[in-house]
Length: 157
Length: 284
Figure (cartoon, rainbow over the protein chains, first blue to last red):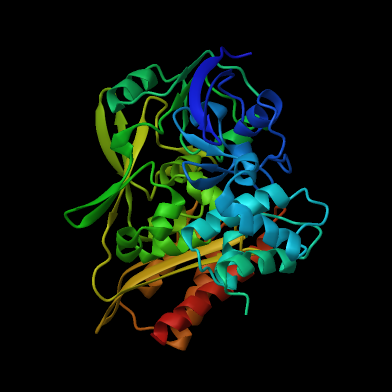
């Protein structure tokens, strides 16, 4: 065991103070210490995007980020996006367009879609596909997911 | 996962260099390589984990004389999306565009990509072609080294354990410079190159000048192709010369068989990709 260090950050808008092992990943901190299990462990190597979170407004793989590096930052997880009224349309679009099947990739997919739309609110389908290229889904074949995001950006035609 | 004795996240370069002075610290920047390598046992963390992400001296970029100074903490997405950087160094922006995924590009840094020294590192081939230099700082001073020769093996560089890579200097390409970057993998995103290839030259009335050719994932380090460069220097691109250059390139690389491609296939790829690039430049 390494000595623990104390970090402070905001998590879904709420201030947090917590002691962590400095070699711990943000993903393990979120799921096993803070109990926020919406962020999924898929591959643990940044290949699948199931653990996507927002760090100071930019998307990141929680599995690749040292928890210690959360110090002083604003972290948003799917639990934060779930209560974000500005994302109501995006969440509903995933339901309306059948963008959810088994659901395992969905939290990461929604967080990354939100980040893509935050950067480019009127993203076309090509931009949406580039935005989501780091998120793997084994059920949908992606079309319904892209349809959902494109419905929000208004470029579904 | 290895245990460490101390975690430091200094806010000043002097403090960071003091922490490195003993040579017993592992440097953490974006973490995208270090997390996987340390958890997988490939890299054993040293007693001190030194997070350099809060060093303002390592962030941002500036034009200094004829060069662009890129702070080591510049993320891959900044190379791709920052208007000034992408305009000054389009080749680097192109490589950044093919780099992993949006999530990784937001975290991964150019300094980390250089220090990780993967033979397949996406920014390394463009940096070789662009004649970049790396700036290394330690408690006892600073030095600048050409990136050509900086890589000494897979994951190994000339950086000493007490040194910190602070910035990368890239000379601005001259007028009439053409450059190309090709990355070959099995899917566009999140792929490690089977091979990558970079080319740069100035188009003069007399022929190509200051030719640079570099390859990734075809040897223990990203590498220049001196034989191919010498063949092309001062020449005009003819079909016969392009064919000869492609033959020379496939002969001077030293690829291996691995999970991504066989050595035979990598030679074929380099041959065909260089021919394609040179044909494209000839039509320019």
